[in-house]
Length: 178
Image (tube, rainbow, N blue to C red; front, side):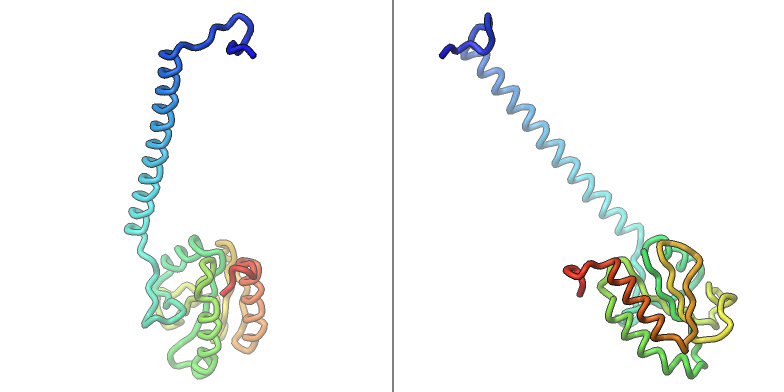
């Protein structure tokens, strides 16, 4: 068999072979360096984003967040696929009776990264839900940033919980669930 690759082509000299190998090594090193720089840039961007966007703070390690104002609520709608809200008041006895059930539901799904549970005090002047409720407790489920929520009175907590379960099933395939 001939050393020629194509008809009329002469075989590479040792010098040409070394030059080709050196070029290949240089290209491989340049490509590896570019990948390392890209990874480093990604890490830097991720660090900056974490520093710029403080994550919502839970009160006393509760599985839900206490809503402070309308702007905070708007941010939750942007960041999470599903926002689950309990509208309540300190003076409301039915709210106090149903609160443990809401908290248990929030605890059940606290590891779902697509879903957030929020409590909104109707007596807070900056509340988002004040004009949306005719009675309390009332529960809302917002999906995919849509401001039109499914609304449930406190007497329909079981239906509300079933819908939250369905959202969780769709967002978290079984092999990823808690």
